[in-house]
Length: 130
Image (spheres, rainbow, N blue to C red):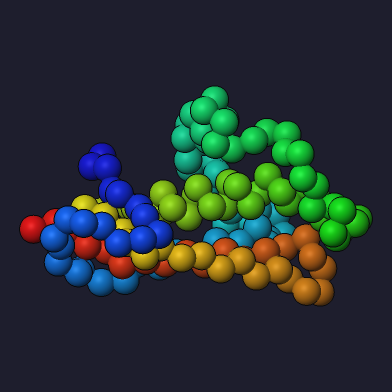
């Protein structure tokens, strides 16, 4: 698969704007969340990310300090959700014929009723180099 550059800034290359790309994922679900399904889909990628230290299997910061008994080990899910969302943005940009995604942004919302669920939205602008 063609490598799609993803950046939170602009690029020096000349490009044509193809349009926005958007992806959202949540760890909410009765039996299986959309996040857990995508983690399985991208399982090999997570193994590589763990080997290179980009995703920690045991993080030092525990969100349980903030949310107590309601944290349910979300700290590792945040990392996984980020990498899943970037990968899914790349797949969507590829379908548009893009070479890169510029101006990537993310928003994480917590379920304020239970605190064990979160929603991640990620978006950027797909561009094709000239």
